[in-house]
Length: 124
Image (cartoon, rainbow, N blue to C red; front, top):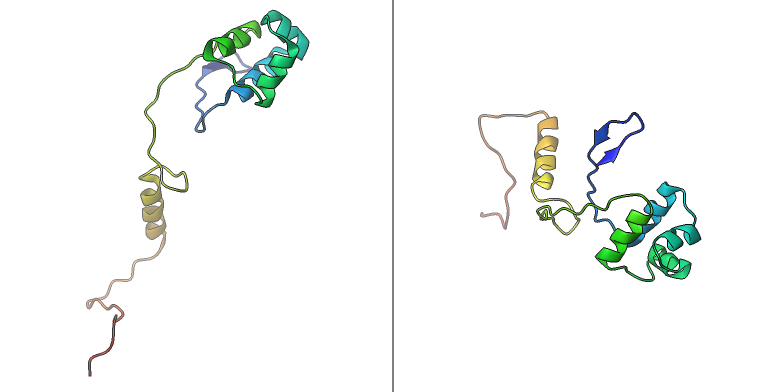
């Protein structure tokens, strides 16, 4: 959860996974702390913190939690069921829903006799 500017709570849902380098950098920027000051508060070196933020090093979960806490935030981790996706990264069922919505957009033309193109060689 996060608090908006008007003081109300709202849920944040990320559809892409969050990376530790992104979280580390966001925590520092949102806390308005410099690299050295946050490193001092988190009891680590500014070089290590920079390595975390640049993605050169990946912190352990407890280290990331300590870093986020030093910036004045809580790190919340929840498990959610993994969505099954196709090769384009689209959730299964979404593609079908899009095709059906597209089909509804076209006008239906009904005839008494169903006609279809012939496949294969013609018989004489």
